[in-house]
Image (cartoon, rainbow, N blue to C red; front, side, top):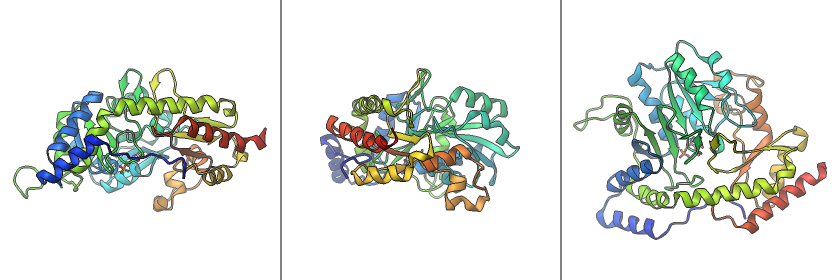
Length: 373
Ligand SMILES: Cc1ncc(COP(=O)(O)O)c(C=O)c1O
């Protein structure tokens, strides 16, 4: 593949950090994790940062905190019908039931106007996802949460550095979850973080990532898992923190360069556009066809056969993934999510792509759509 989704290049600082782990025998969570938590928090001004072994574990641990705020097993957490499946799996893994709300196909995010009709006496939280780095409508969502006394978890795994209005994502809800998998702007190989400005929540998270242990070994006071990050992962993260804005700006440049090149194709597809009130994290380049006649499957295969690695725009979790068939939703329940699942794909715009690579992508996409002109 010529165009991959993301690439990991380990630099001198990370190598030095890794060597330090080896020489000091710190293979589990230790000083590098603590340093990474601090440095990560400093970039976005998050007060408390609790490193996890993955973004999925960050989501699970954030959900586990709900037990300390009155939630019981089997209670409900509202999630978007379309996202990377980790969000819904995390709700299940933490012992809750996901309640799905349809998305808007032009933003790929939860439709805030459809949240309230899904709130029941068992609802404990709203978990939103800033899909493809585009922030959800947080002012509307926070208003609903306040009215119904619900906790808000922001899954910002794809949204490092994104801003809604004047604030970084993660400053709107009670907790936010991040992933440091290779596709993301800050990469640890594998890894995650829950950030929060709430000290009590942070203290709970420090225990849930270690089987709910507090104080003496082995005293387990609440539900938890082994979700700890290790020092070798943090070693990579520390280098990525240093380079964050450089990477962000390069990816943003790539996003805008390609958006500009593909402007004449806006009649065929929704792209991930940035609006005035926000700063979008340049996570990937998304194409959702405006009409099924443009044939998503053919486009996907055409891009792949031209060495552009593609991924589906996730699909509707409750109705297009067999894994959630046990919830008995039926096709048609989430029309926008299903439409995107059938007509949308994304590919990488990472920092190591050259102008020639971007010109090549544009050329391939133009060639595909030329038959519809
Ligand atoms: C929205 C979202 N949530 C959760 C995750 C899970 O993160 P991880 O792969 O680190 O477990 C991802 C992964 O990319 C994601 O995109």
